[in-house]
Image 1: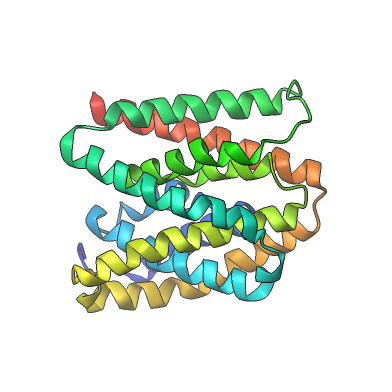
Image 2 (image 1 turned 30 degrees about the vertical axis):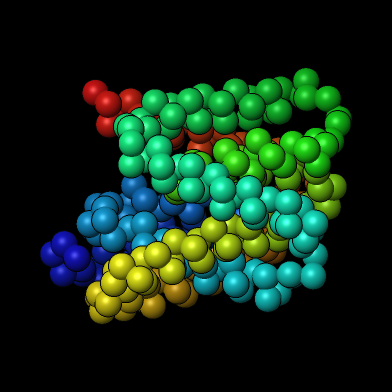
Length: 251
């Protein structure tokens, strides 16, 4: 870790995680984009991804244990193999080229989609099952490159699943499987032999649990229209942050 964390630092980190996991509890994604900028003030950047992967996996497990019966397993069976294939493609791109321009492209795509959806012009239609191919592959590619594939799956699932609760838990399950892969990779690489990292994760668990519980509560009390509007607002903010991240790292 950087300098020894003080109590005030833990409180700031716990607050950031609480907000991030309220969003995760509602949407099933978005933790890294919300929490990472705050966490980077106190924790080495190299530690943030494995820390959030561990917490995201635990959060997904808790949500699935509560509501897994509501997940749309046919959608998961379609998406998971494509997600794995896309992750392999993303890893290859990462090894062979600088993927920064793809980050900008993803940000622009997500912002334009969210703005279109929020405009009220979006027609009331469903994606076909065949749409799982591009969305599943792209989600895997961007998960491998930037740890940011959740919005791609959210766009697809919002066009496939009518029930907001089924969409939420299906998204959460998908992200849980994605983060499980990353946790296994980090574990094999010895990242989790760092006792300080594990103790910090343990200290942040209460904020994570409270966040996903509040997110679940808010979701259950929303209409489908309110839920989708909030998802699109989160998409809009997330896409804007990706564009900002590209601009700040490329200048």
